[in-house]
Amino acid sequence: MENVHRKLQLLRILAEGCRKHPAYRARRTATGRCEECAVVWKAREELEEHHENNPWEDWFDHGGKG
Image (cartoon, rainbow, N blue to C red; front, side, top):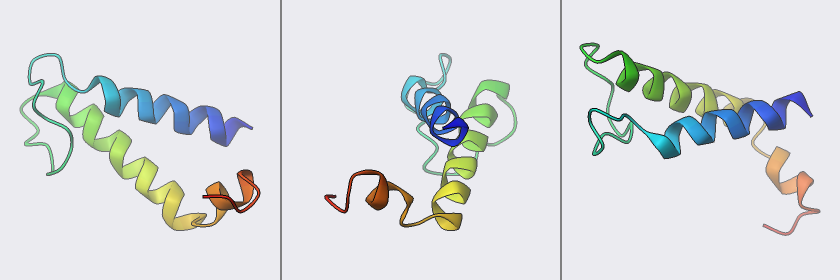
């Protein structure tokens, strides 16, 4: 359950994005000049890591329905 809460936290960070750079959505690596953009980038990396380690997790959570 902790894993689900962490994923929700990370998704929230991605959804909110950077206040200074609203167009930045972590498609490319953050330049490092903006701390908030770097946080968004790290959230994306962590989410991708979770998915790489457990690619079927979401599928099983929904009983195999998407």
